[in-house]
Image (cartoon, rainbow, N blue to C red; front, top):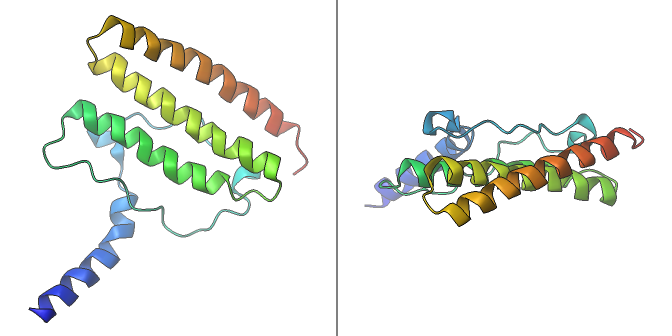
Length: 144
């Protein structure tokens, strides 16, 4: 029994980084539209991304897309937060946070039925896209 536990633990330890980097496009999730600029990633560790959230074997495509947006957001927020300057780190972390909201809103537009929720999702997309553009413009003006 102990050999099985050890083998399972080792398998998970070595498989986790590969699983964390799997492509979510197979689940219908869009790739993030706003990539982090170099200023955000200068201090980011080159280690594998954190383990993705567990979506459950019976999750619908809609739920899988919703959660995939959060997976990408979490990894990118952590990387962006490593910038040396705290103001830059804040903005670099907010870009993927906003992109995560956009990705989740797109999943709602694609799969949702409620008119109010769909209107809210469209409002989120409109507002967050503008704020991402504003943040990217601000970052361009920062000393490298």
